[in-house]
Amino acid sequence: MGQNPSMPGPPGTKFRVIGTKTLNEALTILLDGPVHDSGIQSLGGTIHQIRLWLALMELAPKAYTFSDQKKLDWLISDLLEGYVATMDCPAALLTPEIMKVFPDAIVIVTTRDQKSWWRSMEYLNSFMGTYHLPFVVMWLWKAQAYGMWRKRFTDLLQWRYGHEHIQEETLKVHEEYQRQVVPPEKLFFYNVKDGWEPLCKILNVPVPKVPFPHNNDKASAGRVYWEHMFWGIVTWLIVLSIIYYLIRFAMIMYHRVGHCLGG
Image (cartoon, rainbow, N blue to C red):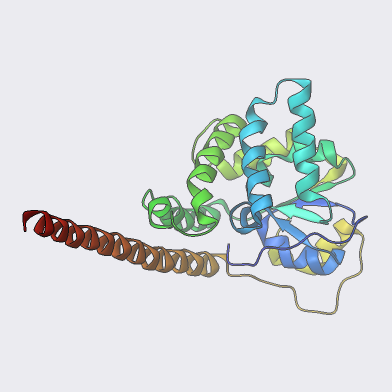
């Protein structure tokens, strides 16, 4: 959260990496191409991207038939074509499905202390998981899809990891799942605290002469949340004002008509 949606690159851009959010800017620099942050794109991207992600999240857990599998492949290809990498949820829950479409891609799992990770997730869940948020933002363009997104993400999480909500052990479950489904030669674990060198070694690219980017995801997420809450409340005030004046106008007209008939 907190970043602008990216746009795909020119035709022929090679998809190379499945990673997590903290790698966004670093991969953009190293791979010289746009990174598809699935969290941002599925909620704040173009209408086309939002619709594709919602369709993909709904289809993935029940893609049993050949035609469903082909449709799933098409959705993934359409979403990620032109990007050099993807990251964050819901893409992080679809590693084998994405690797089927992009078999040359590698998977980079960012590691961190579990308690630190869980504190960050609790902070994020404290506002993103609130039940009033979909109601408050229901009149905002794009944000109207948030209720559907949350329901489908819950179903996706239940299907993949066996629980409906992100929990403290989800990090370990996720890492173990990656070990099970990703070939060892394509799976890498990386801590952003280590900076450029190990990441460049994984990608076989030279170390850039710029500082390693560090994003404050907690601050960005909080800012986006309160921006949505503010504009959601403003929009509700406008809607309620319109309803009030329509009712008032109807009552005035009713009394005028009644007065004319009575006169």
